[in-house]
Length: 201
Length: 201
DNA sequence: GTCTATACTCGGATAGAC
DNA sequence: GTCTATCCGAGTATAGAC
Image (tube, rainbow over the protein chains, first blue to last red):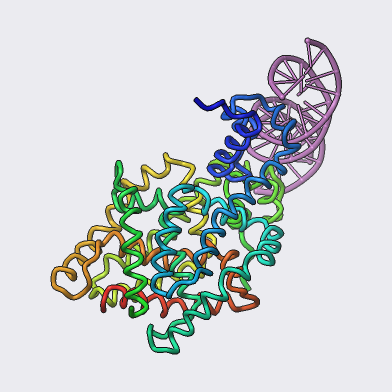
């Protein structure tokens, strides 16, 4: 039987849920307090302000989207395997934290400042190696001629979009019950196949 | 020389910009008034409340994402042409209103009520015909076996995602100046090719 | 550390003069 | 129709008792 979580942990957990679902502007300190089962004062006792609380949540969320991608993109794998690995692990990662991509993209959009430091710190580790591998495969005639920028954009789009657009997808495709869940699981293989065929593999 | 726009039109235009950039929760009536060059009272004179003002903006935005898709998906065209037409026209449509998709998806996410009526009204016109055409092409052996749900999801994802994720894409791919704009223009052809190859066409 | 009470600011909405 | 002034609730933050 596990000891119940500390107040600090409960706050962080509650804040995560509320910020991810409502965004910064839509989130209410009262809602966070309610969900954590404490009163508003405690929020300010542990974290000085809404901003401070948000900062922590945002940074960990950003890492949750970037870290898995960076890991696979820089792994020592042949291109087709890398693509398969990327799609499977990335979709699994988002299934575990389905609100994260929409949250990060939304907040990134209206905070140009956050974006800058992000670019400096993490961007250089995302694209260069993958780009080189795609170019090499093109030069060797192993895949159709394509620009690496589009390949990466396509791969990420196919993995991430279904989560950002979940309500619309369910409505348009008429999903009910577990249909959406099944659809996502299918996509791991479907998207992999689609990517490889699209490249001529 | 055109007569300057009426107050009512200026409000709507300003509200559109602010709501699309900031979302409902982040939008400030003061910001809308400033951008329209009037004072807050006028907003309430023309539109009774923030909610009423928002409703109008949201509905037209929703139509801006749906209408072009519905039109092409139900057009009388062979599948490959339909796909090409969809990608080109949809990307062009979003270029003209780049914030609309993120706005609609964001607000749809936190208003389950809005979603219901949307589903009832428009969903039935989006998918059925396209699904039938994809199934027919599969049965005829013209394309690889795929589920129509994934084909539509992939096509929309490839078109829409680059706009929702613009800041991250610019950062990761190191775009500056017009690089993003050029990238989007390239995508119309790149995505079309990619879709057709992915289906085995 | 946790609570209650309260201060203070912001933002949506209204009243009323012109 | 447009403005100024103002109200009022909501929401963040703090003071202070226990």
